[in-house]
Image (cartoon, rainbow, N blue to C red; front, side, top):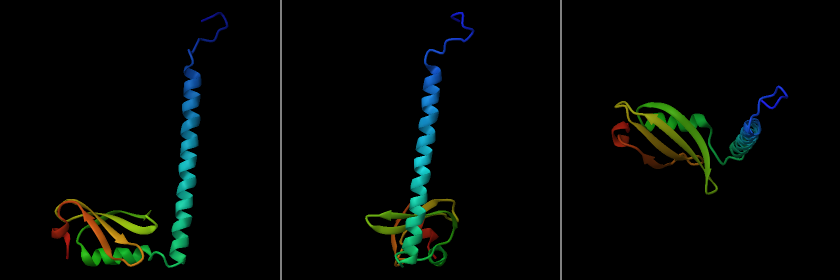
Length: 118
């Protein structure tokens, strides 16, 4: 201590404060982007650029056996794609990529894709 009753922090307080502000700023930016993504997805649905999620769920259930773990709607190269993660009956995780407008299966990834087909 320097006699003031306040222990020196050697800049730790400023580093902690800066880190906290940075985390808050980044989290806020991510939340804004997520909100914009949701707005874009809703607009695409209204414009007929994507089919409703329930339609893709029905296609996946018709074509594959397993439990759906995660579904995302992504825009890639100005094209919307539903990405589906599926837990197959044998315990493998596969990824299925569907055109969000036509419901066409574009690509599959993972072991056990053929075994999971109906």
